Image (cartoon, rainbow, N blue to C red):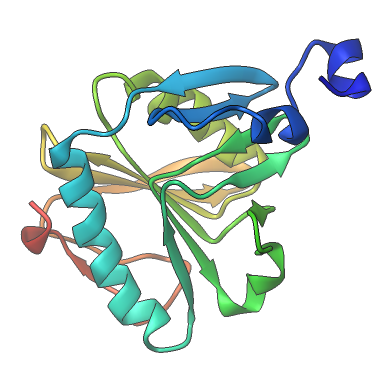
Amino acid sequence: MSAEAKSTGKLGYAEYARIPDDGRRHEVIDGEHVVNPAPDMVHQRLSRRIQFQLYTQIELRGLGEVMNAPVDLQLSDWDIVQPDLVVVLSRNKTIMTAKKIEGSPDLVVEILSGSSMHNDRVLKKELYRKSGIPEYWVVDPEHRAVEQFILRDDNYELLGCHADAIVPQVIEGVRVDLRDVW
């Protein structure tokens, strides 16, 4: 454990990077180690389908990069998470390093599962808000809907709950057809 981690009792990136890969998703939120089981098949299928649509409309057009979990997103010394999907537009590509994303991406997507519901709806939503992430989607497989949050005046505003299609506000000319996702 680093001297800083010993003095604060919180985990930082150095400690996080030493956690062995055991097939589960490890994250650090406010210095606390959070462990979630590996995602189920429904989760993975939804993630792949959303990523494909974002990839073909963003990455193939040279507008940015779309990353899927596991990718480390370090938002502060004590906050390292692995969102299901992360979009970093070309204008912000300097936040991407060889090992991780350091700073606020343009869009984060989390897919709910039984074990992650509280983290995604409460803990991560608050973390993403205070980190200044301009857009956050919460995908609800059970209800076949995507909640779209936009950062306005340092708070997330629910722009809509979508079942058929969703249009990201952070980039023009992109539309995810949710009928192809479910």
